[in-house]
Image (cartoon, rainbow, N blue to C red; front, side, top):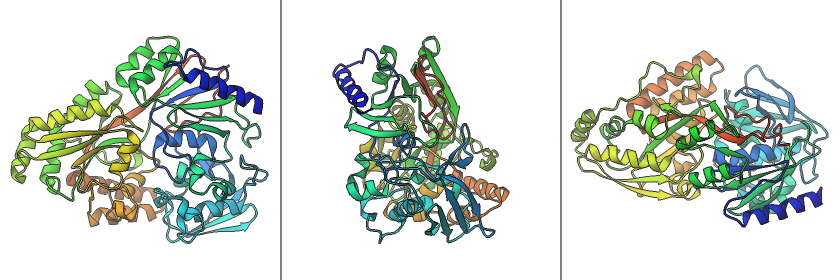
Length: 518
């Protein structure tokens, strides 16, 4: 196997020296990613771009069942929940090892969650862990026996199992963390279907088949994830045979692949929201009238029809319609009404306001961000707002936006793809989720009523009650307009006809264990 891997890496290095690869190696899947990953430590990252790699290297206690957001066993064979909803006890698979040879057991699970949640843990400083919020209700994690682990919560927490299935719940080798410390994100070790081989910065991440995988060894010998940030270059690579699979196909190119029988286009609805964060700490968007004006001023139908070419629908509020049970279908999207926008701007005294707008070149779920940003700039100019765009590479963009917009920008593009109706509002709309508290409320929205509704919804064990609370929250956020609600995307990908058994998942993750390329 080592000789095969060495030969593979040599071939990849040779191929990468040319601008466009002529042919991909047999039984090796080359995936065109939208950006360079930030890290391969599952607890240290937030972007779906990175998660698409991680779910093939790591497992969690549970996972999403194929084609759904329902939870099924993974490293845990089964579990029980106490009557009061405060204790979750998991029975673990035996005879599973991490890729570095160390054993997976209850102590490894305890290590993973203590590392994220306990500031006194000796490896807490290998973070930060930006999505530790997902497990904020965990009071303790205890190894009951070698292969049984118990989580005790401070209060009932409805999204707990779903959050365990999310990539933040993936289990990393404690030995790898001890050996590599803060550099473990460059030296990952999980229990997944593929094991890490190499990471050449801005060129490729290579993972190879795990022949002893507990759920069956994959068919593919290796997967190569190539960061190709420019969408036109990704398309050119796809058409020339340099990559086998491409995620997030630009709308302008969808018909090209549909009309070519040598490619297959895949589409899958999922919980996605593309929006603008508005900086409520400072003028002009500390005024609700100004925030509502932006929602009226942007021609969202034109964005989804002309720029996204029907690959998305106009968004209504903070909850995507894919969460049907929790979605407030009584709300209607803000209509395109520039006259109403001008009225609101005049009411707020915001005529001629200077607005700094952060736009990214591309990133997870960002669709066509430069074209969308330019169109939004024009729409706002038409109602008298002077918008200056600053454009950043994706990881640099996150480094600017996630710490908060105060003192830097007035609005910023953003997209989230989530696993539960709790996730996005809890992490990005609560008062306690301000960036200085470790959250993603980069626009500093604060409404105590919304805070209380979200806290009630995540502790309710009655789904009908949760749905009522989320719908009420949506109506308040819709009116407060802390964001400009733009689009809900239907994800897509394209693969060559040599790729078999591939499918998209509503989680937006890339599950490649069953994929083959004869």
